[in-house]
Image (cartoon, rainbow, N blue to C red):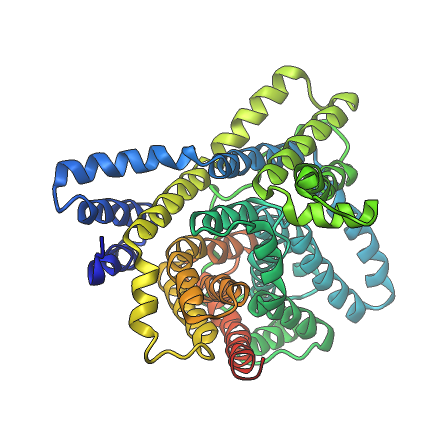
Length: 491
């Protein structure tokens, strides 16, 4: 059945509700209900029952189920790492090195501590909130000591969290995106996701801009004023600033009476990262029919492997390694391991719920053929050359207005992928533009979770954080738009 213009109404309603209420869960749920209301001929009872069944049917997809399980288990891994003082041990090593640098040359220490804060944020790509929270909380005393403004710390924490999580997708972000790609009929979501990374310009630029600003010591705009203020007066914030600190945004308390060791964080994370390609080879091995050598067989198997299975197996392996390490050190006993696992799962249940709703609205839009309708309507006036840039800007606007990149991914991928297919555009570039737009909008938005957590963890004034970060984000967004136009017209 051709639903025509009606197919566009549910995602538009979801976007408007998210803008008005700032509650992405309510917006997505209402969007799903409205979709099935249309499909069931405006019968409210049939539409409501169909909506409930659509949420149940999300779990009919093995990939969706694995993705949701993975996102919950990541919470357990993060709790274990915090409980073992692994993150604290890593930062302690950095602190000791910086003290030596500071004694010799204070200017060099200021640069080094900012670079290390950025790399710490990138290293904690497993989850954005943990990344920005850890960087802000643990580096704040060192930044204060070296007279680096709180706004700069919040900027580094914010700019190294979501961008790294989307570029190193061996985490809940990657699993979520693969699930959305599967919903839109992409047979090899892992291959498409990985291929899109080289076209995902905004997160690459966001990290590059931070790195250049730190090394060059050339700030501009409000950040330049903040740097001058702190260096000249020692004031870490503006005189009228209100530090955004919340007791709710705290890391899980570590076990008392144990020594902080960096490898308690590094080893489990490395296990998860290295197990990803191994699991891809394992799950795709039998799908390869012909190969010239073992290495050739393995490289083909990676492309054929199951992304959702691989991330799930990888996080389970990482958790088991962490539990084994901590039990040997006397940090954990079996009862604590179970308690912490359940605690970690409960902490990321909101994330799992968001995944459930996102998959459900993707299925509903596919049933309504929303993307097909939008593509056909725009085919006459929207050229294939402009498509990546337009998709990037629309995704940016939605993410900026709603403060959520994940909600943006859920709505926009259901539209942009069919558009790419019908317009004859490269799907990987359009996927990258959708994801990059979500990150840009989220990075710039004052109501974004990562921006708020970065302000809280850094004890910075939130509005000052947004003001000082905005010029850098806008530069990245402008360059990204230009790059998509260049690719569209010349690439």
